[in-house]
Image (cartoon, rainbow, N blue to C red):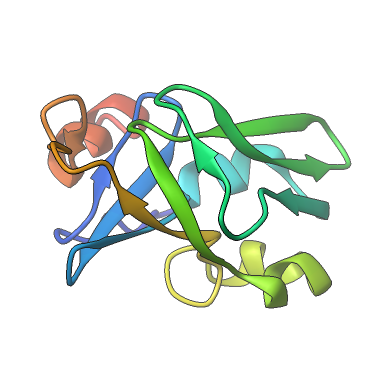
Amino acid sequence: MTYSFPENLKYADTHEYVKEENGLIRMGVSEFAIDQLGDIVFVELAEKGEVILKGDTFGTIESVKAVEEVYLPFQGEIIEKNQEVIDNPEILQNDPINDGWLILVKPEPNYNYDNLMSSEEYKLKVAPT
């Protein structure tokens, strides 16, 4: 399978992607990770207003193969969760980058991208040619 690695995304070692949008961070899970999980049957996400510490989980994704936790690579407050994905987990399989985003987060004030990989670095890690 050929995966998409959009240039405007950064990636955590745990396969979450991060997209900065006007001071907020939209997060989801990479196409590679979703493909590895197989058929997604259930998604649970943290509630709006929750503050999640760096490295803590903000939800779980359950597939027919496994249950995987998703982690926040920085501290932040959940501004919005994608109810569509919770109601229809198959959205995550069909389009994890656009319609399948998971949460919108207001990051801590001193947030930076230093601990995240560029799309090229992530591509080399998960899909070396």
